[in-house]
Structures are given as C-alpha cells and as structure tokens.
Length: 504
Ligand SMILES: C[S@@+](CC[C@H](N)C(=O)[O-])C[C@H]1O[C@@H](n2cnc3c(N)ncnc32)[C@H](O)[C@@H]1O
Image 1 (tube, rainbow, N blue to C red):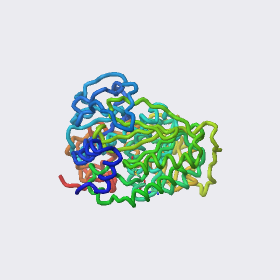
Image 2 (image 1 turned 90 degrees about the vertical axis):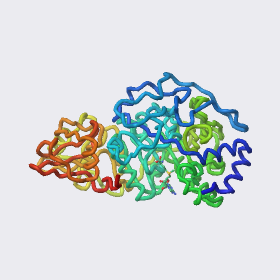
Image 3 (image 1 turned 60 degrees about the horizontal axis):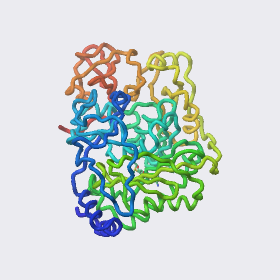
Image 4 (image 1 turned 60 degrees about the vertical axis):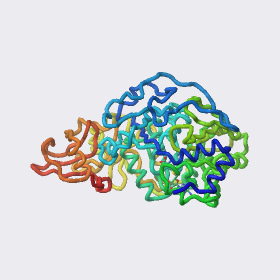
C-alpha cells in the first residue's frame, strides 16, 4: 500500500524535499521492535540509569542528528552510565536484546520479533510490548517527579502509557486510566491487572465526565485519538484510513479533549499532550488553540533535558515545549509530545462531583484479617468489598478511589483479591499478578515452559508439581495465576478471557 499522495505532498512541502523524502523512506522500512520492562517484576530498578549516547547495535542506530531547517535539535544532558547494549537484563534470557531505548529506563530494542504469545513472561506482565518513541512520556514528565502524583490518563487504552505512569506513580500515587470505548477499556483493565501495581482506577466515560473532577490531578496526559500518520510503518492498513478530512475531524476532537483536560489539571500541575501523527494541525495547532482559549499566561514552561544523540526534534508553542520523534531520525515510530505546567496562580478550584451511588462496603474484621495474610504490606492497604468481591486499595489514595468510583463508571480499581468463603479467600486471578502478593500465603508451583503454555491455554496440566489445594502457578519465577489440585485432578483457574487461543 502506497503512502497517501496528499500526505506525501504535504510532508515534502512542510519539511523540504530531502527531509520529506527521508521521512517517507523510513515509513517504508521495517519497524524496530521494542518492549518496556516492568521494574517490579524484572529488577530493572537494579540496573544503572540508562541514557547512553549511542545505541550499541540498536536497530538503525540512533546516530547523530543532522541539522533540521526550521526546527531546533536540542542537546541537553547526555545522562550517566554507559552500558553495553548487548548486556542481557536479569531474568529475561529469552529476549534477544539489541540495545536500550535511551529515553526510558527499562526500554529495550529487540533484535527480532519473538512470538510474544508463547512467552510466559509476556503473560506475567514482566514487560509491555511498546514502541520506543511512546516510552518517552515518562522522561518528558520528569520521571521521578511523578512518584506519589495523581495522574489522569485521559485516552488510555490499550494501556501502554498507563502502565508506565503506574510504575512511576508508585503506591502513594494513583493513575486514573480512562477510555471512552468500552471494549477497549476492557483490554486496558486486563493490561492494568497484569502490570500488577495496584494503583490504577480504570474508568470508561467521555472525557467531560472525568474532567468534572476539576483541578484534581497533578498530571493530565492526553494521548489523543489522531489521524495516525506515525503508524503508517507499523500498521500499513492505517494508510488507507487517512484523509485530509480525517485530519480536520481529529484536530477538532483533540481541541475539545484538551480543553477538558485543562479543567482537570491542578494549578501547578503538568499537562502532557501527545499524538502519533506528524501534521501541524493536530499537533502545534491544537496547542495554539488551547492557549488562545485559556490565555497564554495560564501556562508555564517545564524544561526537560533531551540528548542530541536521541534524534528528537525540539520546538515550542508558547509555554509548551514540543518533541517530535521522526522515524528517520529517532529509533521509533512517529510521535509528537508537548509539555507545559498550568501556572500555580491560574484559575481552578478543586471540585469533586457528587457521588451517584455507594459502591464500597468496608470489609469486616475477619475478612480483612484473611486478606491481610495475602499481602506483603497489609498496613499500606485498605480492604473493602464491591458487589460481594474483596478489593484492596493503597491507603494513600483509597478516598480518591472511592470518590471516583462513586461518581464515574469504574470497571476496575486497586487489586481484586477475590471472595472469602467461610473465612478462606478464593483468590481472583488478578491477585496472582499483584506485585505485593505474599507468596507465603499458599504453595507455589513452578512450571516448565511447555507446561506453562498449556496452563495459559487453560488446558489440563499434570498434578506433579502442585500441592493439594490452591496453588500459585509460576513460570521462571513469575506468577501467572492459580490452580487447585484435588487428588489427581487439577482445576486450571486461568481466566477464559485471557487464555491463549493462537495455534503454534
Ligand atoms: C492513541 S490511543 C491511546 C493509546 C494509549 N494511550 C496507549 O498508550 O496505549 C487514543 C484513544 O483515544 C480513544 N478515543 C477515541 N475517541 C475519543 C474521544 N472522543 N474522547 C476520548 N478518547 C477517545 C480511542 O478509543 C483510543 O483508545
């Protein structure tokens, strides 16, 4: 499928012939494959800080950016330790690593595309398959600055960025991941469960409804639905869907979403706007129109260091710093991101919408004691029940989760523990993925690779390694779910909705 002629015409006009041709050429080249490790499940946190100047052996190599007419290529701090890009991170021997994603700790380029479907670590939430440019959002938000923050991810499915924010926010923070499309929201909730951080609420509603939580969030991220020009390489079918009219429709929708996002942001909070498209109308144009609406003095600049070797094209729109990832310059798909802070003295009083219904009931003492047995840090959690199932939420944000869940359609929050019958927990599959699960609460059965795939297919597995009763099922030490042995029989409790159906 050819690139849309109108797109090519525009790119050559906007970027100049040489640059425009380089971009179009890159869109016809094979895409790099990248993943982002889950620090709570792979020990990435024990690796050195990862901003090398050159990607050793990375696909295409980061190279040194050339001058771009009409745009500045910033060179900021080049970061710290050099490391070998061929070094394999601990615990993931099956991934053939070709280099580090320089702007994201835990981001890895792979030398080839493995069959993720048959990798138990993929199902354990040990990593997320995420294109590299998108992984920059953590760095652009200031990385560690997100710890303990209340983050709204307004257009969140399938959850690539949500899981990154969840890792950064930690147990003191909270990520509200909203997705307007219910089916996509269900996939988002699955990915959130697998990531296992326990600090996410998944809602499914229009941006306006979430943003009625005015001046509530320290960070609002809008990864807007867009015309997807940056996906022309990874998803060639998207070329057929593109049109100039589509660009205009997207730009109008983005403007609306961004205005809502601004309402939800606390004065002093950070807004991150991103798209996977290249055109000005959906990128800089949307920011210009936001600033015209809210007043340019309502936004302040937040600077982020960008290493010249990354190949990112930096610019500005008023207070917004902008970052363009072109596939012929940076190793990743096309991506645009912009960051600014709402001025601390900007208008905005915190407003919490009224509860529509009571959702949570407190857990009684015996139930709470049983749930506490299953978690490593019960003191940090608050337990309750929702429609007869037990949940745990980190105490630091439990009141916020309650307020959100009572006013919005929330489809998942915190950690689903399961149901308690006669004082004993029948664990929910989500509890296996929770990084705070106390493995001392039950026997752990470690499966070999082929048996793990049988388990993930929800097929029968031999009772060999299992103790009588409930077992946590793991492969390579990473939890996948639960199974119950009754004599010679094993009840495979892996959820039907998650099971592998693909044939070898
Ligand atoms: C670029 S995708 C988000 C990708 C996601 N942030 C990630 O990293 O995995 C944009 C999302 O916006 C949603 N969307 C579509 N129309 C919308 C609207 N009018 N308001 C809010 N979100 C919308 C789409 O369903 C889609 O899931």
